[in-house]
Image (cartoon, rainbow, N blue to C red; front, top):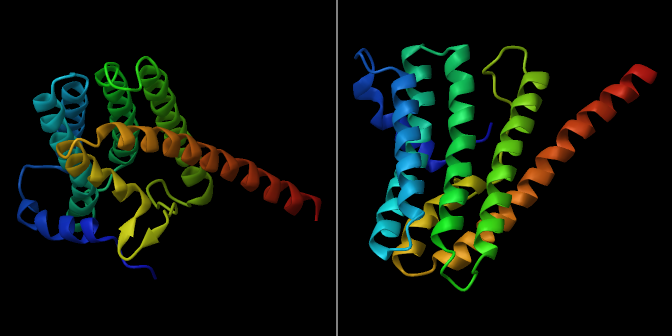
Length: 209
């Protein structure tokens, strides 16, 4: 069985003091959503200081994305609402990020193409969320028994690349990161789109046999 990524293992330790307190997994999900939206709003500014703050806030929000799930498992407070809320938070957070970056980088070398790239990334994030939810529902016996896996190398998942947003922004490399992320989000969306069709095709073949 594949080991959890490093950030999830760290989150598992950090949430232990919250077990038995009034803080619920949904509280953590809500906090991560607000942090992500605040970060995206800051990144929508063309001011370097605001962009630096926004990058830090968004990276923190994505790290906290592991906290709610770990708290739910350790305190046995998993719920159907929390499951969907967590998925929706992830999709909306990335959509807000791409929109924010698109508006914030209009004055960069990307010019108005930044808005197009941002919208493309935002739509891809929402669609990928929907495709993943559908696949998870179709391949899991119970809601929340997530079967989705992401490519992982040396203890890091593919989505952990978002942590590079902060250091690259602080070192003035936000434009190339945004470009790569926008293209990557679109390719990932296409990959998730293939999976439902593959599942439907496999079921069709099984029914024929």
